[in-house]
Image 1 (cartoon, rainbow, N blue to C red):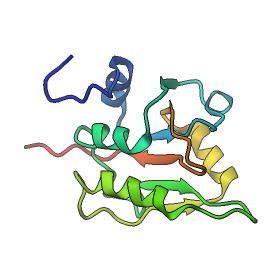
Image 2: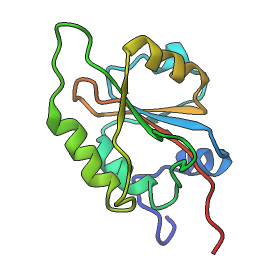
Image 3: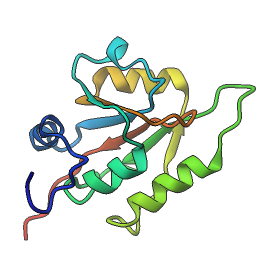
Length: 144
């Protein structure tokens, strides 16, 4: 283990985060998401919920400030409804490091799948919430 890095972040995830550049996208996928179908770079975080991973990743990962929506989730298909508690729990985790984050964009399921095809990586989680997938667009890490 390393000091200051959450034990929720595996060595492979840490390597992936460090290899990503500005504009690259990372998907934290729920347990139902067909990650292997859409992307060759799939990491496993089975058993972990997405809010915890967001809290672990975002102290290390700058969200893209050059786009309108650096956070994207899947919209419900016709006839389904979203559980507002899912997005609320994600935003609570995100705001711990990004208090002024812009609203999460919702896009069509097939548009989300297209984004998954071009994402840098997909992290398969143990999240069981329906429509629990979230895309994070990486920004430029500020120099201090």
